[in-house]
Image (cartoon, rainbow, N blue to C red; front, side, top):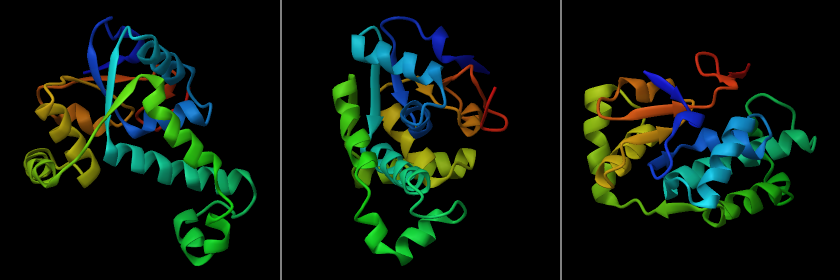
Length: 175
């Protein structure tokens, strides 16, 4: 069962998935921005993983390149690989990713033990690698709540999934 980000009780510890940051930084979700403001104010303890920050940076880099008109939409990662001179022009995404720890969200390192623990989530629940590592980090840290618009976490037992109410998580689009 999915719940809304606004339903997270004060004092809860919540693992923050990449899409929450991306929706905040791109202005797509006021719910994500409000949730992150609650983390910054200390009413919720937000935690994320280094692997999530890397994913956020990657996705924001692609958004920035398209918004600046440096590449056209469609297979943006390939276009950036083929044009490293474009990558050199991107800085906004770097600045946004660097802000996360100052937003009251702690960043948890991922080591080879965490990667191995992720295998259990891949084999038991069919999660992709980053999601399986997210589940492993959250479980290792004793975190039972995940802020995400990713429906795949609904398959994992033992987690409460909180999603932005202004994003249709069945389609990943703004309501």
